[in-house]
Length: 174
Image (cartoon, rainbow, N blue to C red; front, side):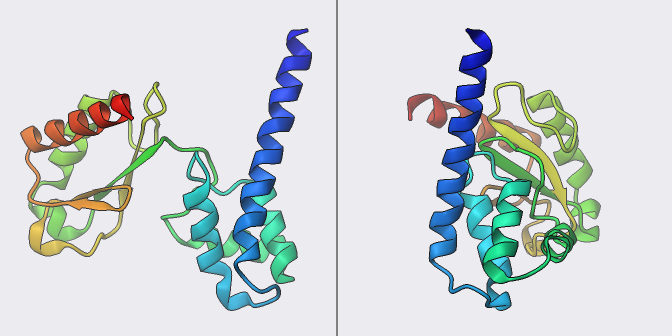
């Protein structure tokens, strides 16, 4: 019976993904290549695991009349796209030279310690994925990290812990 339940769950996940991808694609006219980046962003943002699955990329290729290799090549060029599932919240630490000079490695070390993960990993509870980014464009308030779409600058070890604890509390109550 366990095998049937696992197969049923897998089919349910695949159908949900297909529905969410199709909902995104409905917003964009077919065969207009200029929409590719917007489509990829929308699909990744609407996916509960914040990534682009092979099935989603195949659907995009079909919708735009492009080769799958072109879609994957474009998506792999940009560091903000992921081909592997990520946590509910994606933390990006700026690794630009200004951030490095002002303590980005300390920020990353504190997050690694606080979350008990390495760069590129997701916490055991699936809440956070830790990544670095070449530049977040906020040099004036370095060091900087971004959690989802919210930027945090002038970071200290204490402030990092406060931010992570606040997000954990908010997720527990929602």
